[in-house]
Image (cartoon, rainbow, N blue to C red):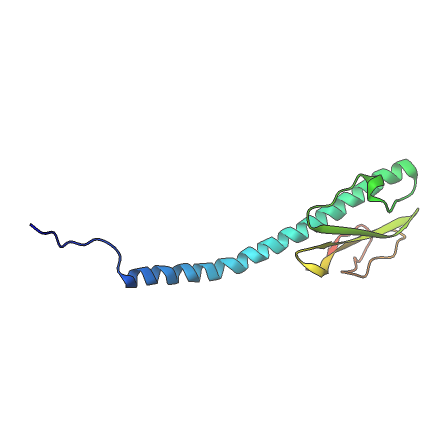
Length: 133
């Protein structure tokens, strides 16, 4: 007795599955990229807020702000570059960029009488973390 009952998928069924997977991937990849960008901005905001806390702790001891991250025991997140500027005894400013976003996008903050950073964006008031996106 011969059994001609063959089991398996036809070529058309396999092609339909591949097309459906392609459509789902085309929808999911842009969503993933947007989520990853939000994470980069969250890391920059967090670093600037941590820097502000460290500056205030330093100010309570020394009655001045510092431009040295070593004095503050401040470490930035992976991929984030934090640059302090306009540091004086009465204020400071800083900007943060992420390596994955390039130098045109980022966040900034300032305190006291320091001039607000103009790149990558300008905060509207002291203590506010402003971001380009």
